[in-house]
Length: 233
Image (cartoon, rainbow, N blue to C red; front, side, top):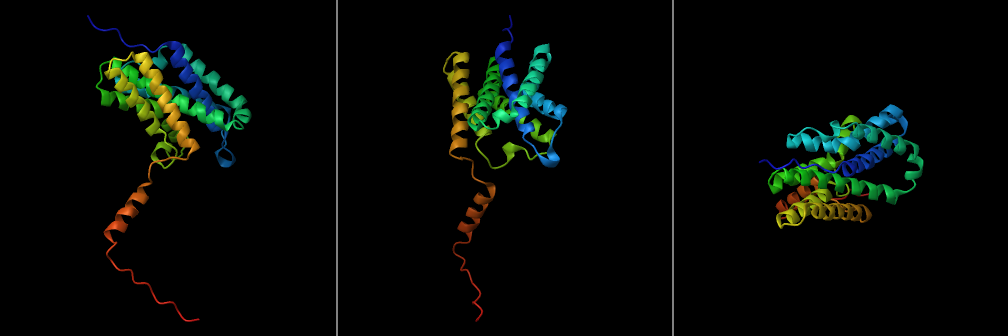
């Protein structure tokens, strides 16, 4: 007898999609000048951000995408994008709300991805990988569609790292027999807190060029530096 397929509660999945849709629409609405988007463009970005994480998660797991199994996902993403457009002016003045919303959305998608992977029998490391991909997938799709540098590939506040930390905590708690729902809640909290603290204190991983320069400085420390003599006035 096979175990039943793990199913994320519809209300929880739709909550993540809705929050992601609002976040994506707010991001797209903030562009000015040549990068301005029309209403359809903003809606598309909102839908991609809201549904992208779930699509990537299920494609990696080799299961039918949950976001395509119900009318509610697309309808929710579209409605959330509309709300994000209409309230863009208000939300953009509430920076703390935006940061908290972004952190919570990352945590939701990461927890859902890791939980579903673990329930389907994946080992811990691949399950965490799926969770991180689900957490950052919507943002990657958004940046690619908009022709922007992919945010997680560049120096900035901890994004994928926060998602990975939450997913690792979730997987670790599950390995110790903690209820998967409880582990998911803790994982979401960890991701959210790390992401918010990273934004507040401007924390980021070291820039690659900084590491390279540090290495060069060590290797050339014994080489005397010859400076040209100053020219007389």
